Image (spheres, rainbow, N blue to C red):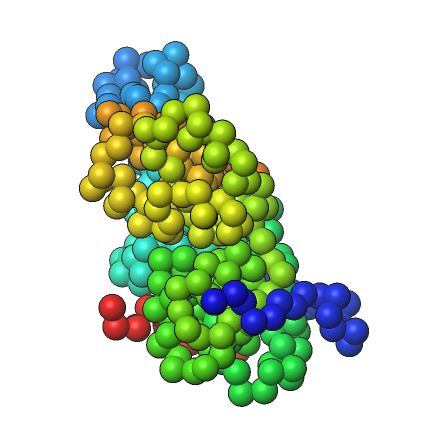
Length: 367
Ligand code: SF4
């Protein structure tokens, strides 16, 4: 059914203007820095990274590898020296995702794997809310984000105060937050979800109505899959909302054999044209199982590169859109982060307790 109502900042005249940051990004620790290693392309570097190039040779031209390999080798050595692990989202570029990451996946996979990490340091190659989630689940570990400016249009669309206003307007209605929210918002809601488990989480609440925030399009997708009445927020992913149904129809007209798969953060007219809709993890599983000859992945560009690196027989067609926030993470700033132990993500303890509860409720849901 269509969503029951949709609200945004303009619908609340009493919305507070100023927000207080409850999470922080700390600069590098004084005295913690290690010296910069050599970043020369040498026969030794070529030999030490040859097995990594095998993983990305279908998406990174040989001419570019000598520019990346010395930094990749340095990062992998520093990870051991620092007892660190690198978590990378599916939207990270192939040299990060396939060559330096220890764990890769979507938000749910990263959140779950973050709870099993034994290392002292987690370097989050993703955006800020993902680093916060890793910190929530690993309060005693050092969590670093290589560029603190890596934000998210969805996380920026709503505050903890907005959730309190929604609760006042709809007393007793449970609130589900997509993990693409700040820790401050997670602290105000009943449970989190990802695009992999959103319908399951909504139905787990056994309520006739649920407030689902902040992505209006994911809310609309969930509403189409359940009888629960969905009250939504007016947030959107700036990457996925740019796709249009017309674009997909033109692709199909040009090649009727092409398969199109789309992320549920896309608008409904886009999803209506897709052969399959699913989270990044579900999309990857679909491609592994179906092995289409020609494929369009309606999501962030690096995802198609990462899948093509793994499955070179699947021809990837554009379009795709880049996420400027994800692209702030580079080999250079991952190296810098490991050398200096900056930027460290911290969360106020009282806020962290409440936000962690919402994430853990999601993780602990039975499949
Ligand atoms: S792709 Fe969209 S949802 Fe993901 S980090 Fe970028 S802006 Fe946020």
